[in-house]
Image 1 (cartoon, rainbow, N blue to C red):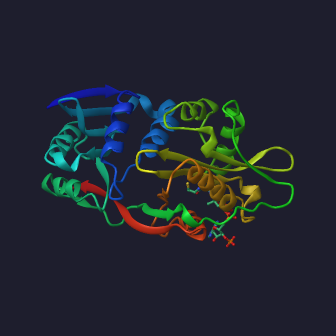
Image 2: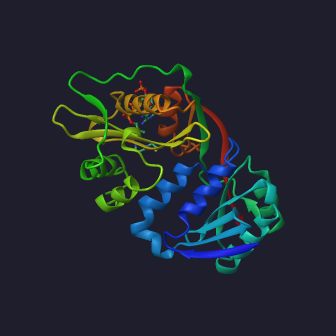
Length: 288
Ligand SMILES: CC(C)(COP(=O)(O)OP(=O)(O)OC[C@H]1O[C@@H](n2cnc3c(N)ncnc32)[C@H](O)[C@@H]1OP(=O)(O)O)[C@@H](O)C(=O)NCCC(=O)NCCS
């Protein structure tokens, strides 16, 4: 067993390799989660990230990503014992750090409990939602609005609609460069990144899907609508259009992971209005 350590963005391809090789509906992370989280946040917080990757022979069997005091980890269930090594590596740097897992990842929960962590039942959490793509409704937008996917050269416009949608808690810090990083990270495809264009030509809603072609599963991350255009069905329509696109590209199923706690119900209300159905939830593990 070999451990490799990375700083900043280093290790992403190895992380995605393991996520894709071991993915099942019981996994917390899809290749798109890792792509989105690393790419969109790299410019603002990448210098604090530490990643460790464990290989056996030519196969990645585990990794941990400390950001720096929050750990995400993926461990091949066939190599469940390595979860203890990942937690040990994290605890050495961040004795009071916290760890996110999906409640279905029982091999990780076992290792967490053994290492002295317990679930914080008061913490916000995310609920995985899934939809079969076999019977999707047709997206509809109001007269004068247009549904289409973005082009690779529309970084500024794409970044602007993201910032507008994510401005409810103060101005979004996401820059054009952050969106450029997203749009150049595998497996991003402009054909799966959909927007609603207002009659003025401005992008006012967006939905991005990441396609895992091995498993035929699309991950919706993120969706947003400019506050001036909400409750007109635009997020629903742009989401449906992106789902049609990923189905046409060969996917059979899609998933999305909105907040499951009652402090932020609007996102799951949106996805459930489209036909997504809830499944397993995430849990935050803490020590002490
Ligand atoms: C969540 C969000 C994308 C909804 O955009 P929207 O264009 O207003 O949504 P739609 O008009 O398509 O809503 C479709 C359905 O979703 C549900 N919904 C949407 N917003 C809701 C809200 N604030 N409260 C409760 N239900 C809501 C409703 O069922 C709605 O149907 P209805 O209007 O007939 O009741 C938007 O509020 C937003 O951008 N929020 C910030 C970013 C975010 O949270 N994104 C989602 C997580 S990635």
